Length: 142
Image (cartoon, rainbow, N blue to C red; front, side, top):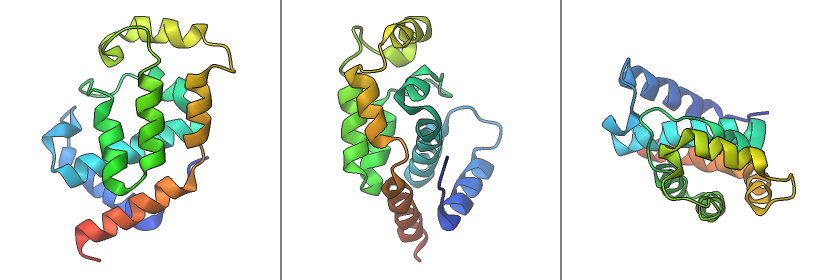
C-alpha cells in the first residue's frame, strides 16, 4: 500500500499537468522530474518490490540512475543505494533498454535473491514519502 503525503500528492498532480501528453518526464524541470520519478517508482515498489519496479517499462526508457538520482535529491539515500546495488546484479548492461531480457532475468530469480531482498528494504519505506513531502515543500518555498 502506498502512503503518499498530501503536499507531495498535489506536487505530483501539478507535475503531471505540466507533463501533459509528453511521454518522457526528463523534459520537465529537475524538481518535477524528481517528484514524478520518486512518486512513480515508490508507488510501484510499494506494490511489488523491485520485481515490479524493474519489470516495468518506464516512459522514455530513462536509465535507472534517473530514479536513484531522484531518490538522492530528496534525501532517501538508503533507497537510492538499494536501487544502484540491485542494478549491479543484472547480468547485462543497460537493462532499461532490454525489456525481454530484463523480464526473463527477473522471472528466473528465486524469492531469496539479493536483488529482491534489496527491494524488500525499500518496499513500504514510509521515510521515502516523508522525504518526498519535505522536498516538495522546500522546492515550493513552504
